[in-house]
Image (cartoon, rainbow, N blue to C red; front, side, top):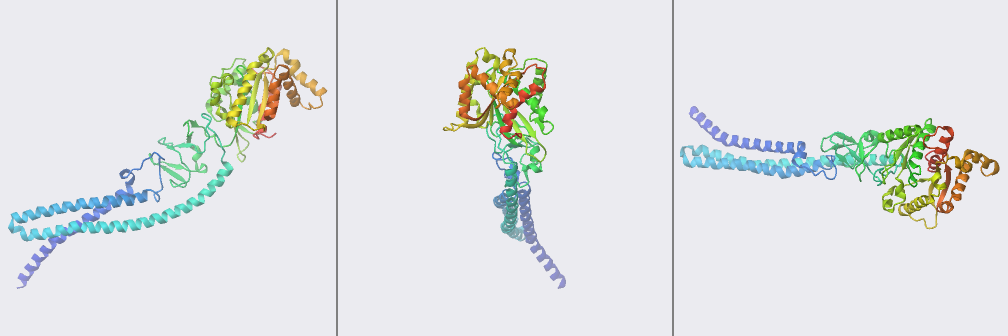
Length: 506
């Protein structure tokens, strides 16, 4: 009797084990699908659920973007995967059912297997639904707390960044297209992706992760952002590291062709570097400009003619002046357009740098003026006034605040020594008590020279339209062997403009 009961128990155990094992297999299959889906959502969410990178090639912080997309991914993909798995189990159910009908001796075991398959197929839906609900609830709670903490951190960083910008941000235009730059485009050093919003925001507080190469980019200059390459957002031209790191001073050169503008500004920059090198660190922001400047200085020293400017839309020389590490630096933009810019009205609309101009160097060729060449000077002046009206606006009876330095170039001609030479200055200082310095004497002599050679109307018109006008003469330019006197006369106009723009002390 006991043996018979034992056999019955074994048969019952086998009959129960068949559907039980099948149900356990279904549960394990459901758990595997849940884990697989969660892994894909958390680890491979970018590849499986891509986001367009048209706006910004960076990944937003997980708590504001990827984390919530993970929830959407789980709720979309997990039911589909579970349903596909359940259909496979139901197909197995139909196969076993066919075997039971075709082989009656298998029917008892087949019906047990069919019961297990039915339960296993449907229990997968229950497990997936419970797992998804639990995951979504916990994940959403973690994301909410995480996002709140990040917003608090961002709220602390943004005021500090604002204070830093108030002290260290400087308005600056692009030196190539003249458009104002509020935020330059930063370039990823690894994949060269262009990041237009590299600052503390939802893409990252202290760093942004590049979407293309996953490189971390600092969002603040103090963390290393200033070492990244930058582009102008308008013309996408590369910007040197010093651009935008100091207050900008814009000075435009005006003059007819062959007035000596380029020769003057090259020697003036050289004299400025020589005089202030003990107090300022002076240098070009562009290495190509520095190379061109050294070549031009060498040509002048050896008495060779400089190459003429050929562009009607000038790329300015940009000098970086920094008194010390603790003091604010200055960026001096010097625009040297071709002479025909001021004799041809079709180039007028392209001189947009007049929107930012702090001062003008009006160069007048003394030798040409003596021989009756006042017409090109008057045309250059008229076009300069048109540029001010277009880009600086009409003043409505008020004078422009921009300073005008009128420079009479090539004044070292022998026939002009009685009018503009150093002897004439000394004589005037002895005769006129108002000429208490060589600079004041130069101012009076240069103005008198222009009035005597048909430009008295230009002088009066200048003084009626601008608050600050001063006249200078340069005794030597190309190929001169003089040193101190020439450096003084060449540097004074530029020095006066820079002092008026508060780039250097008066």
